[in-house]
Length: 188
Image 1 (tube, rainbow, N blue to C red):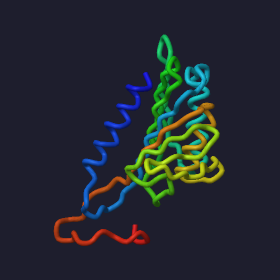
Image 2: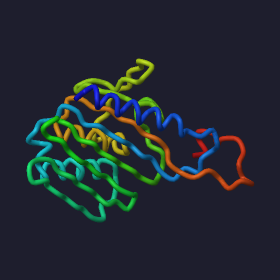
Image 3: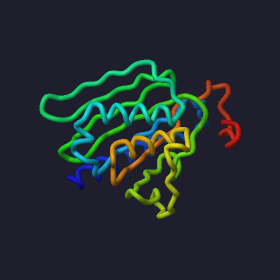
Image 4: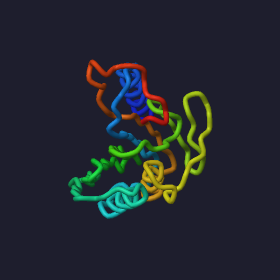
């Protein structure tokens, strides 16, 4: 149900907010969690369509695919994993609910994603991303590249009419002797 999905998203957001550290971070990558909403049953139940959407996302994000694994469940639903030299891109679908959970982790330079780290964005398609503070962030296109382009490619490829996105920078705190002030934006 939508209420359960909303509660799960809120729990994830609260968990991420609770674990957010004030210590500087040696950034190792970006982790994006995308919830695809109201996508057609046939798209979400098709290994070819889901694999195609993830391949398009990898191409749009300039990511290097090292391998693929696809599994179709006997009744309905698929899981797809792309192993990337930058890390991974995966999707698991619930066609009967019009829902897919997509996970993308990449190392490399920071990427511009809507609303900011640890701040869930929501979107009705067509339309812009909406932030928790009611700001509107224009949706990009898959031609835009980077993680934002990868997200758009998944949404386009699966024919979604809605989405939620949460992302965060991943990494390690610096060694105890090197902890100081957080790095400036340009220093990441």
